[in-house]
Image 1 (cartoon, rainbow, N blue to C red):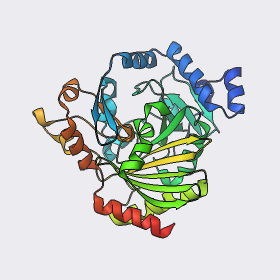
Image 2: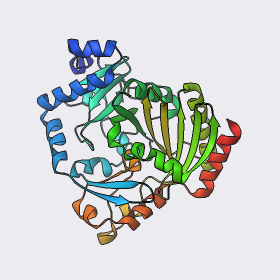
Image 3: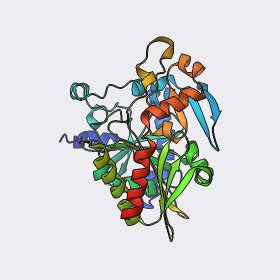
Length: 343
């Protein structure tokens, strides 16, 4: 396991008296607002990345009770096309290890385990990467507890996102999450409509609910509760049944969102996958659409780094993209039934 250099750490942690006071009060959200403001002033690459969001193109498609945005964002080309084969990973330096971060990059310390960094290639106007201090593989089975805790600590403004090793993580060799403003995630806005129109309630206990959502594009397991143990039990049950049913050696292919507020507790959105990239990613000529769906795409904002793809994509393309990467109805029904029987 590759460890960070403590001298590097002292240089990279962002700290001011105001930030320290906020962190002591567990107000990480406002500490991140200050971090982002300062990094925009001190780091040209980050400043240019966020300035570029002023010029991105967006168009919206209406589906049955919800909408999807499509965003032309050339800054995401490297992430969309990332080579995540084992040989490619082994033959490049890890860009999330502290010693390899840009000199100007600073981050907020989280419990001496993670560093919360501003993302220089943002999708939204607030976009952070939460990096484990040690070089350790992307594995949610060993970090789900942290995933929940982080979303609670950041819940004033932000949701925490997870991309699995084979479905969106551009650094599958280094444990990390993302955080974005809750208002940026369309699925949170559409939640009640999705529940009303596209949902089977799997578990309905007092303030403990699990839903199976099939909205015609995505299959989603939604867990709502203030009970961390209940959420963890549902998640472990889901992962176990998913892994057993697909005979995968690695962790199941999932993307996840965790949103927390004091009134409702946690909302955990789990998106089960069957493929990393859709068929159109590998096509040639006019049939090609360079898109590699990850958690932000599943949340309701599809990212296209090439303008020609943005101009030509249509609703049928979006249906095909999700059909290629989302688990089928039979498997989804099995996963729902297993949760209902087990919990």
